[in-house]
Amino acid sequence: MSPTKLSTVVLDAHDAAELAVFHLRLLGYVVRAEEQGWVLIGPSPGAGGASLAFETEPAYVPPVWPTRHPGDQQMMLHLDIEVDDLAAETARAVAEGARLAEYQPRDDVRVLLDPSGHPFCLWTRTPQ
Image (cartoon, rainbow, N blue to C red; front, side, top):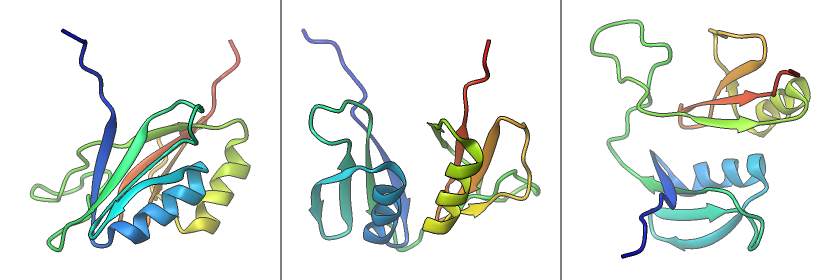
């Protein structure tokens, strides 16, 4: 029996194609598969790394981060993206359509929201 492995993280959105385009630009990924209401993206062949898929969900409700009130749609997961230059990559993500979250918990991490409202973190490794 072969071991199981996580292949893809799927994010719901009002518009899967729109969210896929944002993440293609942010991560430098390529489209691997696409059909009505669903897009799979990933690193170029041979580059290694996780794939992402986006699925259109007409009843999608963006998460609230950080959760402030009982009943708010909670963040179920977020993506961590390691970068070399936190300020430059934060500015690039914003230029691509992300929004900087109001609350920033650490100096070496920037929490942003993608165009569908999913939180994601840009972070830089702290020298040891």
